[in-house]
Length: 260
Image 1: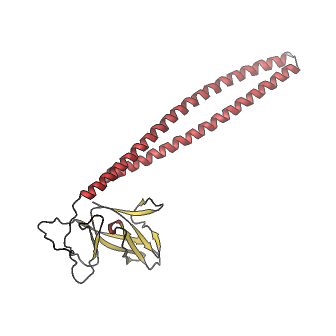
Image 2 (image 1 turned 90 degrees about the horizontal axis):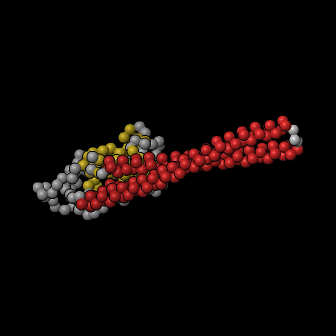
């Protein structure tokens, strides 16, 4: 589903770019039509000028020039009319293509909405295990207990193991599979760096520890799924260039981490 959602997003962006291209072509075509109409008006003015000369002079030379110019104007008019007809046909095809693209965009939006609903439904139907964790030092363990939309995390830097809040029977409850990951950010001389994410319901923040020159981060054991997060650095929201970025729907970006 995540792959289908990414493909749908890519197709949606491609369709939007193609629609914008055709709209730009349409604007250029209309500009060209205006130029052709101006040229047609200029040619009419020349015809009127020649007619005026004919009235002022009855010489054979003027008559010959008039006839030759009229033939040229007739040829030019035929070419312009053919070009205008071609542009009108192209404009009709472009409008049809734009309508087709808009229908495709609507279909992609429908696919995205359907995929989001399906993902939400699968998340709600997925088993919510609650088990005991004993983790090595210097990391955090994140799990989801049997309460919808509520995540639990435990700091394993404690001197004693961290256990679940309720008695558990390992022979009857499945183990929550997690993967150890390091989330880090590059920074300058900032002192206070915190991590917040969807795996903590955006309700808590973890302080990041220095992990090298110009970097801070935290080690987490995360369950499988899609996790978005941001850093709070000296009171400012920032994203890390070391992780993938995605729009957050609020005019900014979040970092994204997918655990397979």
